[in-house]
Image 1 (tube, each protein chain N blue to C red):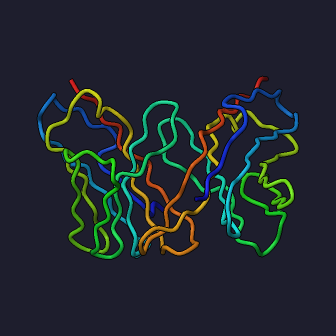
Image 2 (image 1 turned 180 degrees about the vertical axis):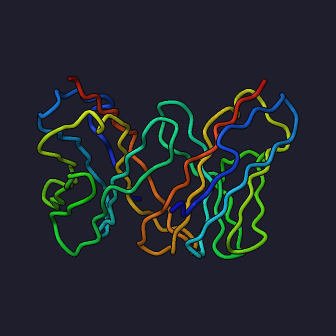
Length: 112
Length: 115
């Protein structure tokens, strides 16, 4: 049973063309995270929501934004993708505190 | 600030051999530690977690890890490697920030299993 679902699994977009990645969860966790992972590297946190409170990492480019319309869904918007934004994007959820994070299978983004 | 270091970006073992993936942590407070596995083109799957209840932690797929405070280590082991264990493994520590918990990852270790 999939608990953190990311769509699509693979996304191709053109340089500079806005793209949205989606994440949904059935765990009812109050925290949702977005990570960027490049080849042979650890995931890098972009931002997270604690309930409706948005928390941006200091080094996350302005080009990346997020929306969380309700507990179950969270979106990652890339306003003007550059070639350097090609990566795997991972969504994760958690209860916070000392609880582990649960990851989706990711969306691999390619930029033409 | 909490951090983890994984020694060895690549580890190669023969099928049936012992798997040992090393992780050392740095923390001024009792750490909460995790091991995750990532198969190609998939997300991270939780293997096991240390939350101070027991120093020897058993996880899924036959893996276990031992928390050693004196060595600041949390190495991952499996007695007998299987071909399906070939994957990337990440050690991570919780770093609290704001109201959510943050994970600080090690650099990852790619495990290769030879027939």
